[in-house]
Length: 113
Image 1 (cartoon, rainbow, N blue to C red):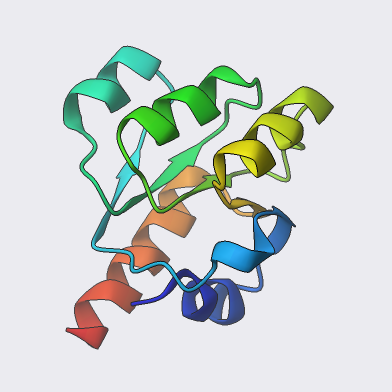
Image 2 (image 1 turned 120 degrees about the vertical axis):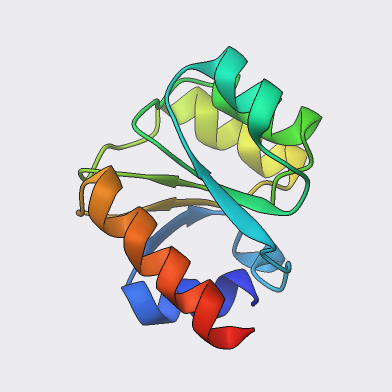
């Protein structure tokens, strides 16, 4: 499923990377501990987190993640958006908590396949 379909279905606020919403999402990972995400997320996953600092972009780029969704209406720091744009990583915001957005994305991905 493309990121764009997830954005539309869940009414996500795209903060940067609008030109890269055609990326295919192959799964997802929810977590705030960067080392955990580095060890367990896979290429093509969408990452759901509460972290807003620019290190999330470094992890997403390193792991070749499809994009990042920030939960609980958390807003990314300005330097995070700059780095994400430079690295071509879409960053989106949801008002939902991690549990709910994770479940909704899981349902979207499993119903599409």
